[in-house]
Image (cartoon, rainbow, N blue to C red; front, side, top):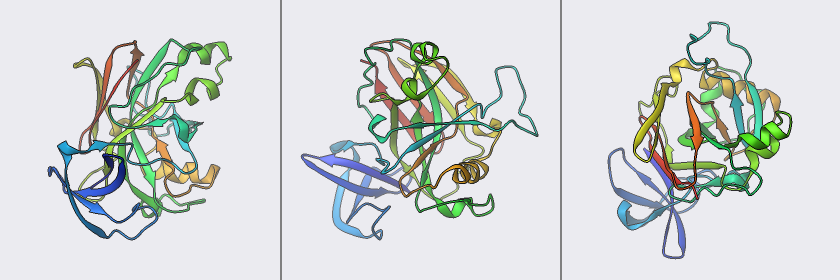
Length: 255
């Protein structure tokens, strides 16, 4: 099943779609905070505007170094990933414009699998990690590389600007989706620029959730970016598509 957040006219709705269906069953409220109950409304996918499927109430947590460097093999004893944060004001949805900050023009895209948390979680074990996950979506973890360089490698400014965290197009929940063995690819203006598999991750999704929940308390709607196997430079006017097999494609235009 897929959970979408969308607008029709001036109204914002939540809805559920079965896999491969274009028929959205409206929900009465945000499924993170309300029982999943149909509203009685039916929408067609091509008649609505998809929004970011979640606006984190608290934070977006990103991981660095969770994939092997090009030419290296996955390690059986991987190094601990680094952690950084993005504010919820960085989040945008499908087809929203990516607006480069005035102080950062060397922007890089990073195609990633994102994990959406559904309940308060602190010091969660690897075995219990799945119980705090609502589902998964596509993410583009944008970085102003020139700002990071100017700031001595610090990522606060480089990762946090408005529009630096596209998410979407919806949240995939349940089913046979395997977050630890799915393909991720990225296209620029329709041309493939990179790909990889989450099977290459040093830390599995369950281990990531356990690790991050040991650093800080996770709240409903928090999003974890699991790292990228495919990144590169993005220029003004380019259309970037992040595709995660089993979820869908997230598309944004760089302004």
